[in-house]
Each structure stands twice: as structure tokens, then as C-alpha cells.
Amino acid sequence: MSKPVRLSVFPLPGALLFPGMHLPLHIFEPRYRAMMSDAMARDRRIGMIQPRPNAVGPGEAPALFDIGCVGRIAEFEAMEDGRYNLVLEGVSLFRVLRELDVSTAFRQVEAEFLPPAAEDDTLSLSRRSSLEMESRRFADAQGYAVDWESVARLDDEALVNGIAQIAPFDVAAKQALLEAEGIEDRAELIIQLMQFFGRHDGDESVTLQ
Image (cartoon, rainbow, N blue to C red):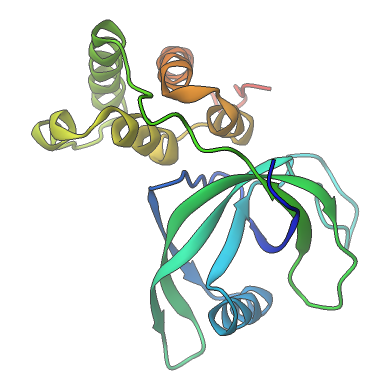
């Protein structure tokens, strides 16, 4: 494992980032505007992580999941009213070791970077076919317009992680996708989730916990 590092984190439910992928963000809250200014002045990195969906008392910060992804600010636009538009490029998954007691308005953690996925991490032909078929079925059921010709040209990693980032699953399901071991397991989980959520479409009480 890597040497522990200090990370400023952006807890955002439903927002996943994977190494090599991109995530557009619109920053407007004062504490996260401060975090962006700090990141731009230092190493342009922030940690994207989901808060756990547990009830907390007034003024209490929600607990964080253990695994997130470090993003490097690849594009940055400062607006006149103090808001920011930016694009994060995923660098590495990380594990939270502990949350730090800090005076900043934004939260910071001590974390370790996780090893990158194997370079030869690919899907079997049958898994790729099943994923594309289930994605078409799910997109049609949800009313999404998708350029399937462009999808077909994506490599396995971009296809699997791209779907994981944008799929409208709940927080626990998204976290399970982030923590899946390799893209074969992640693809299989996406298929299961699409089948699960597709069967319960419109039932807002259904979550994967």
C-alpha cells in the first residue's frame, strides 16, 4: 500500500469517479468553493467520496464510506459570482484511514492510495454482450437516448466504468460498483442492478442496502 496522504474530500451522494474517467462538477457552496481554491493553489487534487446514508442529528456531518477516488482538476472555470465549473479526471482509488480534525470548512482525511487495476483487465465476450444487451433494455425502459454506435466503440474499461458513473442507482449500489474487484465483477454487478431496478421501476421505496 502507498504512504498515507492528506486529502480534502468532497462528500457527494450518487457521484462516482473512477481512475481514467471524467466527472463534471458545478461548485457553489462556500465551503467547497474554499476547497477548490485550496486545491488549485496546491496540487489540484480532491477526493470524491460518498457519505453513508445514515440519519444524523442537526449540525452533524454524515459518516463517509471507506473507499473513494482521487480526482485531478483537469478543467477549471471560475465564474464572476464565485461559483466554479470544473472537470475532475480520476487518478486513483483511495481508502480512508481516519478523518482529520481540521479548522477548514471542508473535510479532510488521511488516506492511502489503492493499487491500480491490472492493465489486462478485460471482459469476456459473453459478459460484454450481456452488458450491452441489458444496458439497451434498461435505457429503453428509462427513456434514455443513447448513441449505441459510440458505445460499441468504447473499450471494456470505459464502457463498464462509464455506465457505473451515470447509472441512476442508489448510494449503496453505487458504492458496491466502486468497490467491485475488477471490471468483470463490476460488469456482472451492473447487469444484476439493471435487472433489479428495472423490475422495480417507479417504486421509490426500493433500495439496495
